[in-house]
Length: 255
Image: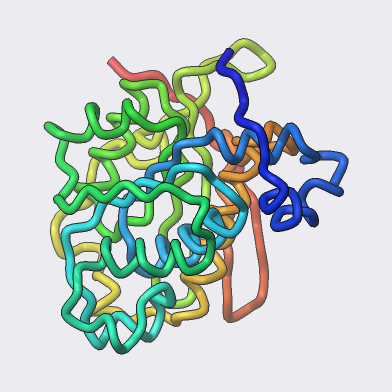
């Protein structure tokens, strides 16, 4: 068990609203400071995730993104601004994070995550958050997290709907059964073109804010060891109906 870092006087004041919560307290805040979290994608989902985890005091935030900020991003990717147009999203996100909280260390990985490079990148972090928008990268992230035994907070959005789950397939549940993996939800990527991209179908900017904020909340729960994470449960959000539903899913076993 690694030794938790101490908090400076400035940090104690900064995080006072966390520390006063019995469920988090000083120990939970020190766990946040010790945590190394990798966010895959600094776009619509990654923007609120990075902002809230930085504000929460996560000690090290890694960012994987090889894209640049474009004008059409700004409707939803709130960590970037008009002055960031044409800049690397990873660098723009880093600057925003340090404006929010200078205590956070930011590690940039300006590349596209692939099945080949994912395991080594993921192995150097404690927790992974999937903010990607395509199935190929989602499968690469999920498979590498399973291989390297790292918890994964996954979300997806489309038009007016979102989904969220936590994946820990390398552990068992209270009944001693294996937790489900991403491939228990999606055994294989859908055929190209079957699921339209956000660029083709559209998406409400505030929707990705809701789902990204929920991802940040699940990450904080996992790091501080509070509450019941969404392991084996898929949270569904219908923005038009203002309705949340939760469905359970199980490990199916794969040959």
